[in-house]
Image (cartoon, rainbow, N blue to C red; front, side):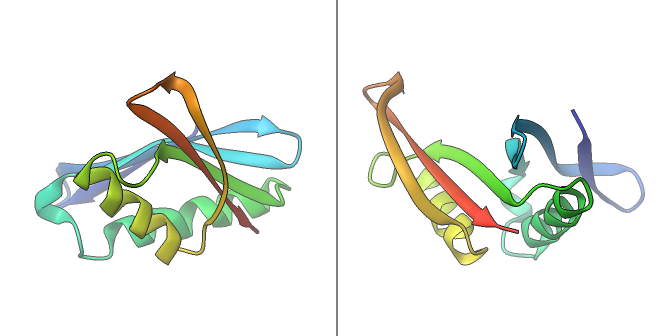
Length: 111
């Protein structure tokens, strides 16, 4: 899978993301994370910008991501807010895809 890292001071990795093909038309953010102390500095936004550019260049018309649905963990509520602020739209919740206490929220973004 393609992987991008967020590196500061030319040596410290503070975040990363990977993308995979989930259908002929859809790229999926497989995993993405920024260390909490580096949140709200625009690094996640830069990663999304890079991923959307990559996805467009490779002919995808949708970008999707899965996370824990809102209302279960504060950290994931913030994650949901981030994806929504980036332009992702709620597609569907799979209440037992992972397990009952971690319902899977699927977001999509047209590219």
